[in-house]
Amino acid sequence: MGRRHMEWAGRTDHMWGIPRKMMFMAVGAFAKTVANLLNTTSVRNSDTLLRLVRYRPPGVPLITVSNHMSTLDDPVMWGFKGFPTSDATLGRWVLAAEDICFKNTVLSYFFRLGKCIPITRGAGIHQKYMDEALEHLRNGEWLHTFPEGKVTQEDVPIRRLKWGTSSLIVRSPVTPIVLPIVHRGFQEIMPENYIFGRRPVVPLCSKKIEIIVGEPIHFDLPSMKQMAISMSRNCSSPLLGWPATDEPTGLDEAAQRFLYAYISDQIRGFMEKLRALKI
Image (cartoon, rainbow, N blue to C red):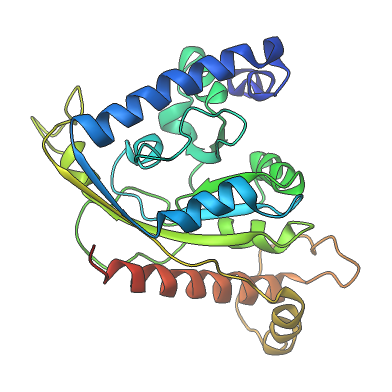
């Protein structure tokens, strides 16, 4: 299984970085074509995203979170005019479903070059490749996640968020800047049930994409950890034997559960407010 995940292909020094640069140029051109030539894309507050991608303080990681409306959300959501989609150095890392993106060696190599990290849905927050995502945050890089954990094409409120993103925020040595994003329109470009219950072979065109970028969320983790310790003392929920967090004042499982749920609810609230906005 580890061999199929091809960690080596995702390293910066793999073949001097040339395959990755070529991949980002090709996929970037595809994203620009779908977003701007075949369809119309409008973005609200794009300057905030561009500023954080290009100019955030050295060593400070960025986590962008968004709803998940189709298998084309990433990379096409980064294809809007003015965004450096083809820049492999600035490009995001992204958590990607193992059962879709890493089914065989060809796909694994392709997505590894595209800075994708395999995640097994349902395997919990302590699975192996969450540590790889954490390493990129430790290096001050940009990580994108879809915290709902699955594609939802209906116009419904943001689903309850999985705790993986929250756990990365808490475990990162430097607290990441968290930027919420909500988009709509991708469900029309790549509908899940187009013909005979299948997706179209190519993206559909003449559709409208809307992307709404929020404002950065800054979490006061020291205060939140103290609150989690206090509020979880009387916790009666069954525990699974999670390890304590690594910091000197490590959180036990009950406190972690409270903290991850609280952070997830905060992020979901910000995303839901964005969902109500129009461009």
